[in-house]
Image 1 (spheres, rainbow, N blue to C red):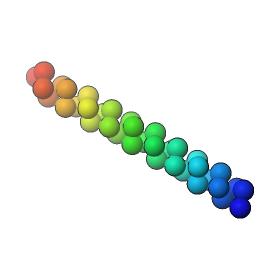
Image 2: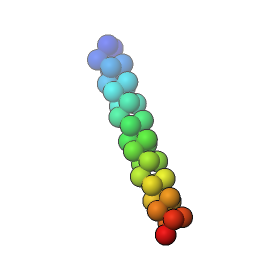
Image 3: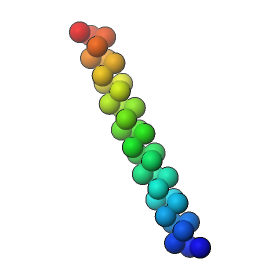
Image 4: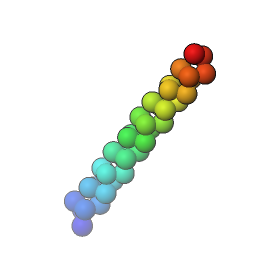
Length: 36
């Protein structure tokens, strides 16, 4: 049970960081297109 909870938390933080990176990349892309 303990390891399962830890794995779930680890997966959640991994997803969060991946989403944040994706949003940051997309925002940079949009800004580049706006200034170009």
